[in-house]
Length: 261
Image (cartoon, rainbow, N blue to C red):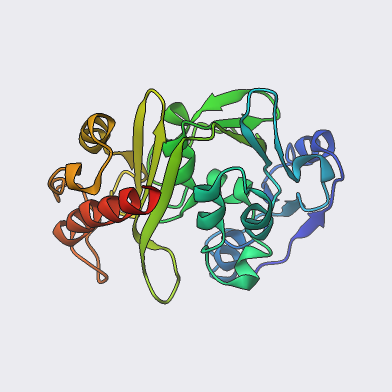
């Protein structure tokens, strides 16, 4: 890695000020950024650690019944304390390995928006709200393509607010070395309909499978899941072709609906 300075603010305001420095980058749990630095794909002059900011950590339920998770909350904490949303807690408990779960944060994962990460599927399927130091962003507006989000330079995710569905489940077909999702599907059933979000499959990143949503809103059963979507636009690499990933989208959706039921 190249040399860099590190700052450790203890408040969101101080972190935002530190990120105003040229070539400064925020450091959450470091599970994505540190490997990037090791490969010399990024060379910031300053890293701004967010791990000391207590105000962006923790899990609670607000007056509207939404599950609110601070951006600096680790996966392990979500798995342990998000019992009000079992589908989300189960997802967090199966991210990476214990070392990753005890360092990685929900804010870091959602900010990075890796095309194979698990949390983006939960955020999008839940119709969650991403809260930053300056505004609130609906999930449908937040994700804007592979590694692309609505975040502005220096904006920090302080909280993610999840409406809690009646039923939910996440199923992923793991890439065995990384435990990232080769394809992952999060299904959330609400009183007014079903939302289905897919990660790991598309060249555009996480997306909603609207055909499955329509079918499952009428009949929430694995038998109602439509045929696999087209393989066009799906990721094709050494782990699997686009057609294979499209097939897995349907398979994982059926398994998620069965698990939720």
